[in-house]
Image (tube, rainbow, N blue to C red; front, side, top):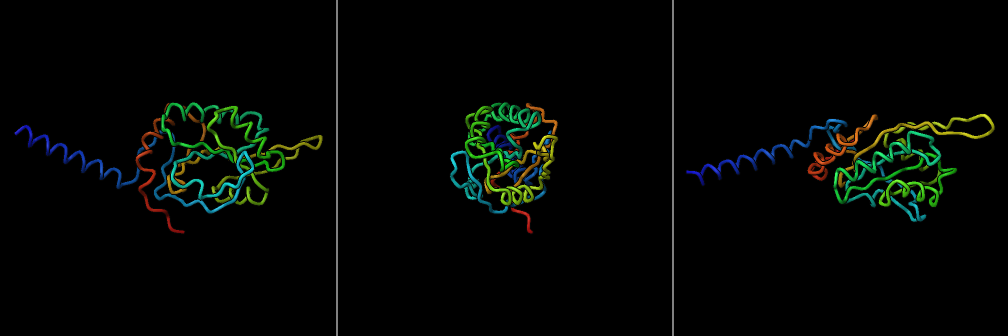
Length: 203
């Protein structure tokens, strides 16, 4: 009787887990899970070594993507510090963190490489020409605006959003500030089993 009851419980647990995964909607405390994964359009950027980086390089591993610039006075460094802590606390070995520049004039590959590695040696910096970066930001839905400053300098206004990509390089979830480290990390652990199972949205 006990063996039979155990078998029934195991079968029910397996059915419940499969049902939850098929639903494709983990409950996130600090982010928004998209009803359907949104494909990222192909692009051609440069990594910190100057080598081409395309959408194909995102296939196979989940990633967090954040847009910013190396001369950002506060929001970008604060966010990258939190992402370093979040990545550590989430403890997902294959999770990548990508920092995409919105300031191609100043963020050359060497500059962006030194910048992101100051926060975490595993972080990846991406840059490119102005037209390509503008196109990539638009595809993600990131607003970018150059603001001229007195004396001929300038700064960049941009959306402070973190995107979670699944293993098919599709946007699976969106996180907006303020970012609470423990809640964000817990959300990533909840989302991990769902990042390779869903159908993409049709466009």
